[in-house]
Image 1 (cartoon, helix red, strand yellow):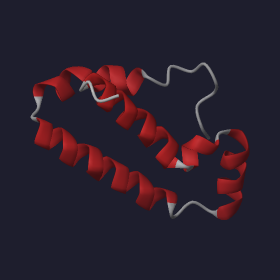
Image 2 (image 1 turned 45 degrees about the horizontal axis):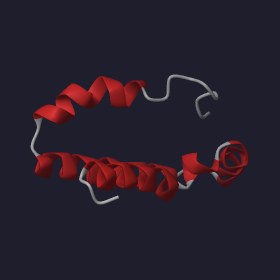
Image 3 (image 1 turned 90 degrees about the vertical axis):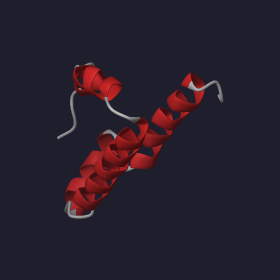
Image 4 (image 1 turned 120 degrees about the horizontal axis):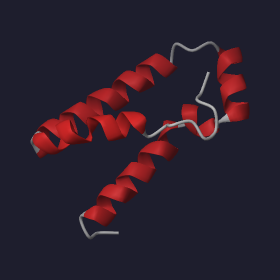
Length: 82
């Protein structure tokens, strides 16, 4: 089940920030793509009734492009490209 609205959903990002800042850009890119691929593969195995329930509550949990685009926009802005 997706986290409840208002839950500390940024806790993972906050907890990982120090490590992310300590590794090379190439490693960040590899880790990010690997994580995205792993999420995509896992989502492919979720039963349709469960997908339907999640889509009804929080579609961006399943439609990962929405969430990923938010991060890409943040990166572009940080690099002065947005």
